[in-house]
Picture 1 (cartoon, rainbow over the protein chains, first blue to last red):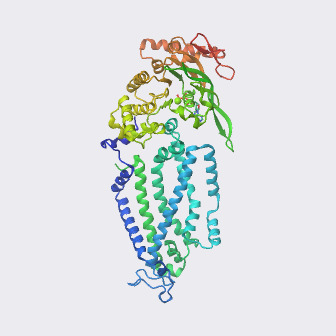
Picture 2 (cartoon, rainbow over the protein chains, first blue to last red):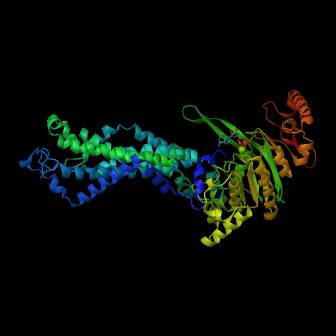
Picture 3 (cartoon, helix red, strand yellow):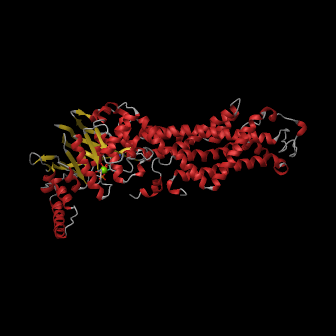
Length: 301
Length: 308
Ligand SMILES: Nc1ncnc2c1ncn2[C@@H]1O[C@H](COP(=O)(O)OP(=O)(O)OP(=O)(O)O)[C@@H](O)[C@H]1O
Ligand SMILES: [Mg+2]
């Protein structure tokens, strides 16, 4: 009977109980920080994707030796870098690239992690054993060395290869998270009930188990999205990220490896750093609100 | 007519341990259980916690792997069938679960919960389906508007009714009820029990009723079996077991029922003391050197006891 308490507030809703999305929206509305973050995030993304649509990436990546290291001016809003390239343009395209990369890595790892995690957790036993050994193997690989090797071997190292490699390494955490949740869910009687009612395994996994791990997935997805923006940047900073012809936030920040740029040419790396900070923080704040929405006990009324 | 017959059923769970998670031992949750259910009767399984009652019930609906033995349902051995072969029998054998909170998927509406078995076995239009679900809701005493609600909007007793409605939709012959009222308030327990009896009349059901409350079992069951550590130690008509228990474990189980009348309370205490000493002095009459109960031996045409 105690379990009724937390759900007590749903009583006023008489016909349809609040759907997941409605609860999430209510939670965000109550949290000023999350609401502000969401607005900022939406504004940045709209602007970046909108503006980059009208920009010529080739033009921006073109080296112009007559305008090296120019300070911000009305021609170049954020000045130029050592190749005379417009930093503002690179910032826009870089943000777009970094965000898109993060989005795809998060998406692909989520798909792999979810499928394998659900299978391992639901079936347990031998299936679980095999999947867990694969995960152990991937985790045991020296990640950074592997990336360095791939970067040097692969003839054309571009965004797609980058997404592929990162996906290869990053799905394991999600798979384990989903697995442990699925393992505990499958012991609950509603799963047993479905089995005795003659529902096939795939239907139980998709329609009974999945809805009950969905809040976990959404929250994890959002928090990962923030994490993966930083990840792309830090690798680029180490020199194993994307080539300069593909501007990214990491490329811009990595110019700060040059002490002269770091000390005297702030306009090259400060805006990109701020951009990463703002993106990561705002995604995180939204994610925290989602996390509360997913867990009824933490909701702010 | 015999509907269900368990023949020397064994369910052993492996205990894994050591470095390679090898099987080091087995939990003998059910260790050689045999009994029969006649069409239309209610058979009770009682015993203390961990005695293997639920495991026996779950083996019948294939929620547990059977280690050995037979589960004959209308003469077919379910234990030897694969998951695919068992599917037609799912219609005939249904289960009511102990915990009404975890047995309903919190993310599903009542309509989807009760219609799940229908969708597996029949092709119905949404409106036909809705009508059937509402009929069953009516049978279990819930309003037809309930179909759009989620489980958390109901009380424990109401949820258990939803679970019961779900188990009835396929018109089963046998229902395994695993402590269907033990998670409920005492005031609601009697209600749900009576209601299960009404349904038995209406749908001509056979119940395998699992419980640890002897009072409830006696109220519900025509015959019962007493389980102890995975073995049946006594079996017979409910009043035989209740009035004339033969096995020391059964005697102690009955003596342990709390009594409300103060006069007999003192007698009970004495009786329990007496049984404890009897248990110690006659232990070998009931259990072999490994502490395992003997096989059942008939002492009358209906009454069987595990004696040496
Ligand atoms: N899946 C499992 N794996 C390993 N051991 C199990 C499993 N299920 C049950 N057991 C063990 O089998 C024994 C019998 O359990 P069971 O659930 O059948 O008892 P029960 O008589 O229903 O008890 P209760 O009244 O507490 O429900 C217990 O010792 C339990 O720990
Ligand atoms: Mg049990």
